[in-house]
Length: 261
Length: 347
Image (cartoon, rainbow over all chains, first blue to last red; front, side):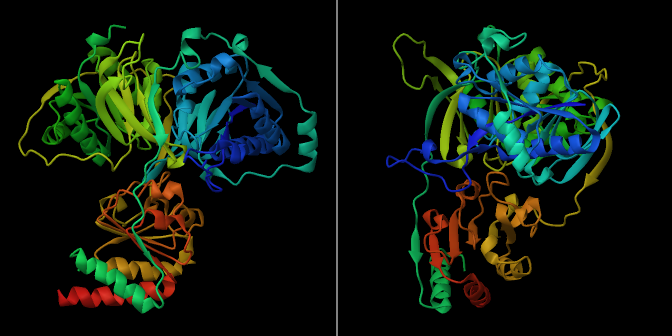
């Protein structure tokens, strides 16, 4: 079985967000990590590899330094890494990104493509389903469990108040939730392999069956009209009471002012 | 692509188990407003099996027209037949704008359909307006009018971006549930109902549903609550949520929680407030033992009154709280419950 896992390098928003003095986001001060949902997708692929035997290829699109997440993935147990990087691909929205990744994947053999549900920088959840659409294969989003049965894949697909057990013919694309599993750590041997591993680098010329008009900033149907730091509602009052009684009196007093009680 | 051909604001009227989801009414409310600005109509696209009877309900919430795609293949949501249905409606009717709820269904359907009809899609929008693109004239670049301007938080709620889709149609957005306002229903309103079936031929992209497992839950939807008593990791244990439940009960409210609490397995996911949970805007929101990560704040900052109780004086939750109290929740919350109980009794 051949599995492709699409991963993205993202700034870590979880461990404290850093701002520049002018209030803009200080991306340089934030760690670059493998997107959490993607890591769960990778772990799912590695478990399928452990269970059924599989070749796991990790693929990312980004700046040259995104090779770091490919090496991390190899250190966890992935077999090969492919970096898609090219200046003409920059500034892509989800349409142009999915077109690019589909163009790269057309060069590869696969039974399963796994992506994370969404990346913590964009939070769109669009690229996975859009890759499936470009490749004309079935998509199952929001996977919380993945099993293989012959040439079929059986997936628990999460919804708000239920889940569906779905069966799809492979090849198929699955988007993974972080809840799917706890990703393994890199192993010392894996880290050794990862340092030695050769990362395949592809540019625009390596993309199959894609038109220039669908790539990069120019090929993106959505355009940014305005971007700004979020203006937050200002802080109200804060008290440091001497006693719980004082705290309670304060809150009840405010509620009486507002006619809540 | 002749952009002038595309007219009307279309709304995907999500239904589950032949019951219309709240987001459909919210989208109709916003859609009606956008349609008024564009001097056009708002159309609900109702997809399912034996769902025609729901059309009147959509009319009451503002739909001028309802397009019904009814087929046995559409009985339970699956990506492929639903994407085929919505994409076919778009190709047939050529809408200017298509709005889809950013639900677990819409965030699957939206990207599939937008890729199929080769247009842009903006995810998880919180503000939709009609305006110019570019916002201000730029020499040498045509400024287009009557564009859909879609505003959304990104970067875990740290930044906000306004997006346009000037050269492709339809302009598509998924919209975050709980943000747009539905209209007061107009009892007895009728819409033009039109049936359209593009034909459904199962292929390898049709998945098989082997089982539907519904979560057993008797909790109220936190998005509908007027008072939310929300707890974070600082509550300490699942058992200790008891003191929050007591407070909620006195005020006729409901308990909700932060992501950390769900991740720890203390509370189910449907009670989670925040970027990856639900967006809430109750009249009173208590943040108890919640530090206030930006992802949490993104889901509750529109609440009318925010009360925060936290022992950490520097917790970011105090930056959005109307009334912040630094102290031990274990001592304050039970006493507050008792005091409010007395105050309510006096009323």
